[in-house]
Length: 143
Image 1 (cartoon, helix red, strand yellow):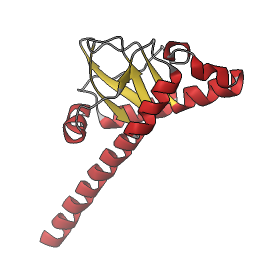
Image 2: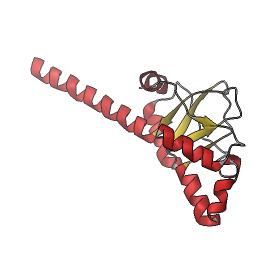
Image 3: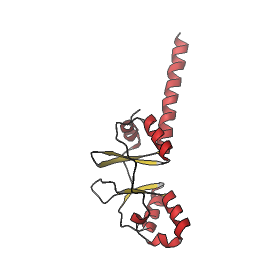
């Protein structure tokens, strides 16, 4: 399965935040939308970074609660691992595991198309396995 197919089923909605927004505002967005990461974007579908719950927790541990009053740009991960819509779910799963990331923006021609979480990847993979199992059962019963 390709990432484009996964996005088609999931939808293209991505919660974004501007780099200059406050960390408290970003946390409120995460809570409101029930997501664990926000794509940091200055607009026009560009990706400047990603802010995850993990980024916030690490900053709180290292520097205390003063980080909550700062901008998202101070905590975001600027080196974002992205993938194209033509990538396979299997390859993205490997990348997410190897790079220890849980959210990957889908980008084409420098434009944000969506975001894939590790949960999306696991669900897609389980769906593929279930489909394979159903085909094998049909094959065995037909023979």
